[in-house]
Length: 144
Image (cartoon, helix red, strand yellow):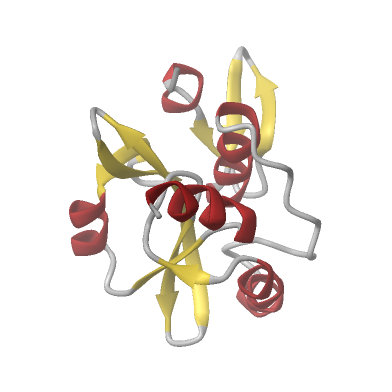
């Protein structure tokens, strides 16, 4: 299930292109692909530049996504946004793995990996979670 993503290579601006038989992603590209391909969630609209080398433009794009995807608790399909002040510097996607919540991420140093929520939050100083409005209703509506 996760193998195609776990063997991916980090490339800034990567959106899943296959180069030499290996898929290439940056953190945004991986998160979007997993949400769509693995979880069957609708694609997020294009809100502009998302790049670790263009943080000001990325911050503007993040604000658009933060308005579309409200803050809330971690749940499968939610984006895990790593914050530095008002800047989102990294994202991952929340999955349920081995009966627990974890974040799948990719970065230049570690490559693609998953971390339990607590480990992800210990790795990064401040994390916010954003889930689709209808996803929240599906998850919390079942519990009611």
